[in-house]
Length: 452
Image (cartoon, rainbow, N blue to C red; front, side):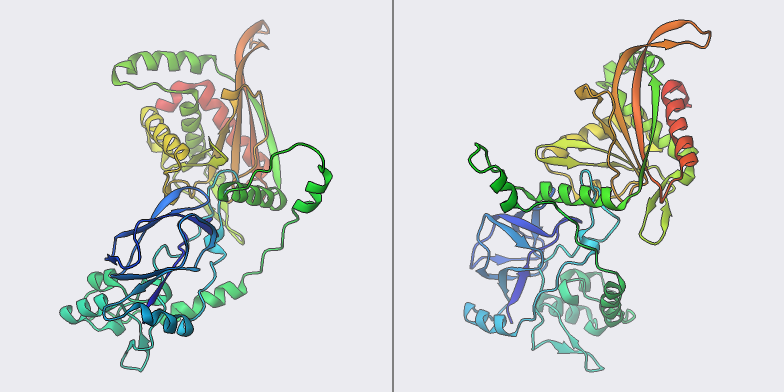
């Protein structure tokens, strides 16, 4: 029976996408791993690969279509011996596509960092065929023709292989990776546990969004304006920021940091690194300072996970990067172990690819702590919104010359940077947050310590 190819969830926050471009046409033969289409998610344009072999029998969603829901059919794949005449029968027999799970919809509030939730399968989904083989206990086994042929050649029992394809369908990769005589996979148990877990999870309350479009448009009737359509990223940012401010109990800690020692040290390092083409920014030092502070105050290196906290051992620091129409927060993993020059090179690469919307989901998902730096735009200070499930975010302002009173009571001029630590009170209490911020201040005011 023909197989439905479903709209995949290519990022953790994707609920719908735009089918930007088909790279195949009806009648084309495809194999597992072939690129079928380019799909615009809420974060990037990504390639979508086939997980099975066959012939493209029908394209259901036209190129350029927007708002295509995850798990909705976008094309039909014909197996060996099938023709386009079979497509009508497949439509009648096919069960409805499952909806995307709540876990697959979680993401970061200010840029896309996501909750540590598994995205929905990014593979072509298969509609189970009535002619599927059966196991020894009479259970129907759904597998692609290629998978069945490989299993027969390898002497494998399909009943003992867990399918990784949509709806548990066994595909080529499953039989290639399987060992003869492998223990039966608990596919039925896993399938039954998933709905039970979803049922036990309370549904999220609808968030108030203010006046609807018609009401707002009426307010400005007769005025000159341009209506701007929201893309996927803007919708996600709006939704997640609203959720973050409504559900996270923020509190704020503010400090001024004297930068003169850091600026002098940075200038010396950059002269020595000039031959290697390395130029460190103040932001590189801030990333390193935060990473080391999370190690010095490990209780603050935590995230909120609904009914528990997760305390991380590495310092995975996210950094907000502005892009057209929204934000990304790429994550620098194990930042405490990397040199300043390594952090600088990695951050430049992540920022460049973020602006080109070429980041993979694993590069902007996770982390326990975020940095948002608007100092380069001349902003003196601001309060940032926490990026769930992070425990805190540091808002960094510009370094400006200010009069300060020295330790000896003398008045002097220093370069001072104002920072605000936004903290999730469920994860970090006031004293713990103050301790973390003090460590950040100490690292930046004594930069040589960060190299010890």
